[in-house]
Length: 371
Image (cartoon, rainbow, N blue to C red):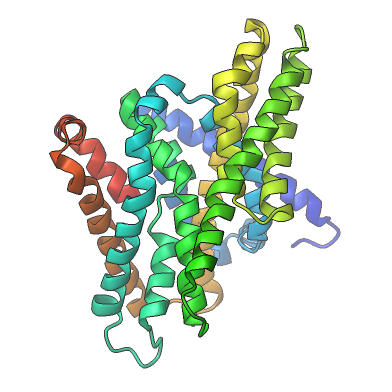
């Protein structure tokens, strides 16, 4: 960092440079149809890899790559999830709810088990350095097997997926947090020498998959009750939705130790069904404009920042990632992709899945590869 320049100034510079780069890639997407989010990620990797040759900009990239992940989560994730859930088509979501639950429940379990077996038997069969046990393999699998809501939401909006397919994949990515957390805690406890207690597993599932949505619905009810008393005040409506979003996430995640993601999703879905009907047309238009703008800002910063982290880390410490790690990461990517495709293809006998797979097979492949 340059002497005499406060850290806060560098943070502001990084944010606005990221948005400027995002604006440039958005313009390239409009003219040449270059995918927006993958292009941002690749560009971030290039900037991070060349950070040692960019002077002050390289120092800025290195500093940005060391940001606290918890700060990123509490600032960006609630906005992205709430905006997506609030703008969901409830009628399509309701019709697809059974299939969404099947993907977010049994589908996630299948993917965790499949990926864990691949990690233990294929990637780390006999490795005295890493010493991957079955418990460690399934713990890692529980972390990486679920789809990322941010990437899925951005990708489906970018490729213009059909509404019912968009709702299906996006809904699964928003609701799979509970299943992943339960199995992560289960295998992490076994890894640390604990026992698989059925009561503890059931309690974790209720706490993460049950308590989070209840908190979100409570915040949605309170917010909707206030919204119906507001008349033609766009600023107050927007302010209230922001308070609902962040306070809901904070209370669920940090106060009651539940799933903040599921709480925000439930609050957003409640707003989509009941809350938006209490808002006048002019305020609703302003609300969508503000949330859409902030959603694009958060999405741009997150993907660019992810690229910086990937590009900077191997250059700052050569012992972090070597050539064998890159090969194993590629193998892990292949295993996850195969497991994801198998999970989607298993229920193909059902009429809905068969029609979906035949009609939108390219989108299915692209979505699986991108997760």
